[in-house]
Every structure is written in C-alpha cells, then in structure tokens.
Image 1 (tube, rainbow, N blue to C red):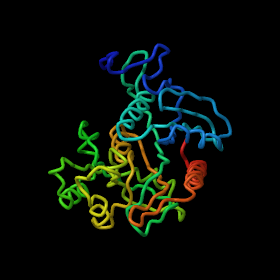
Image 2: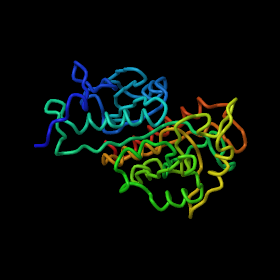
Image 3: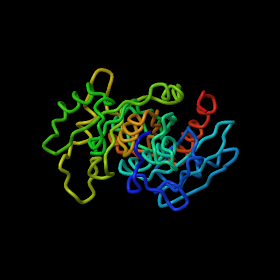
Image 4: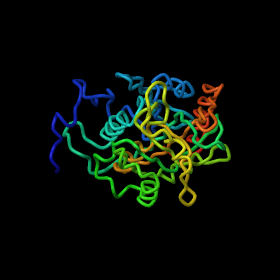
Length: 295
C-alpha cells in the first residue's frame, strides 16, 4: 500500500467531492468533452438523450448523460492552460484515486478527452469556419515545465522550432506534445483537416494582438506561420491544447483537440457565423463518438 495523500494535496469538499470541480467519482464518464465556455456545456448536452449529472462551481460546469447509447461527460474548463492544470488533474483524481483511503488506485482507468473549442488560423489557406484536428500542441506557456515530462514530448519538432525561433531572450521555451493518434482517428474524415496548434497564455500580446500596448515580438504570428519542419507547419493559435495533451499523456490518458476556426489572422477575417460553426463541430463530434468504439 502506498502512502495516503494529505488533505492539503488532495483537497475534498465536505460532501466528499473534488475541490474545484465539485464532482464525485461516479459523476464522470470515461469519454469527456471539454469546452472553454461554461455556456457551451448546454450547447453540447442539449443533444444528449438524457442527463444524469448537472453540477457547477465557479467556471466549471459539468453535465453527464447519454447520447446514442454512449455515456459522455461535458465540462467547461474556462480559458487558459492554468485552468487545464486544475481540471485535468482533478478529473484524473476522480478516476484514479480512492477518495476514502486517499491512495492511488493500482488499477488505472484511462480517460478520453476531446476538446471542442475555437481557434484562429495563421495560414491564409485555412479559412474561417474550417474544422481542424491538432496533431500536436506547441506550448508557449510555462505549465509543463513544472512537471517531469521529457519522455512524452516531441523533442525533434521542439528542438527544430526552438532553434528556428531563437526566442530564448524573451524567456520563451516552447514544449511540444503530440495528440493521441488512435483517438484522433475517431474524428478524421473529409470534413476536418489536420494541423499543428500553438497554445499561449493570453489572447492579446501572447497571440500577437495589440490594442494599445507595444508588443515585444511584433512579428510573432508571421514568424510562426513561416516555420516548417518536414510535413509540419504551425496552423493555428489558441489557449489550451498543448497543456491538455501534456497533462493527459502524463497521466496515461488520451486526448485530441478539435478546433472551429473563427478567425484568420493572416487575412484579417473573422467568421460571420461563428455560433453555427461551433454548433456544427459539436454535432460532428457527437456523431463521431456515437460511431466509435469509445465507451
């Protein structure tokens, strides 16, 4: 038997639920759709045949129900990699830690994480309202540097990108983690394309946007867009994918990020039908899950 996790490490609420998410182990399915916006949880679960769990705390809203015979959880993570750290660690705890003994279970449960989110394209040939699967996530934040994660990273792509960018003077040390190919294959079709996704810790300066503040790297987006390594090029930017891939893979889970492209940073366009595009991606995601072997 291993040592028990202390009450300051595994924090539980008075009702026994995990601290931030307010969930009990039985509240989650093994197939979990993550969305950033808490209002988007209902936009997914409205297609469920039934809903058995409806809980919320702070920005974390969770619905668990059934769709075409599949038990599915949809949860809002909020924006950014810091929230991904909270949500994914606590979801793993719900699956793989005994809350009574506070010990890690010997028999692990593998979870399937599917992000359904929005993103901005860096490439002129990836127009708005496109669907894109992130075959890898490039983290420009610091989250994964706090974990022992060298063994899960795509070191070849990471090194090539680091040498190309030369941004060490800005204290930017990107990490690269690939998606789970088997889970990604569930969502592959002629309706969705593949790309490499950059993840950063903010929406404005960290994604090359300036309203009134001067940018430290004015050509941030152009530099990323011009990078190529074999068949890889950086296709889009958002705020969760790389961290999601890293934390999921470290825990032994599977993860894939599905992006609705609402902005094209190269052409300056923004979708005029963003809500419809996101709704189409939600329906596509559920349809592919229903046809899959996911349980």
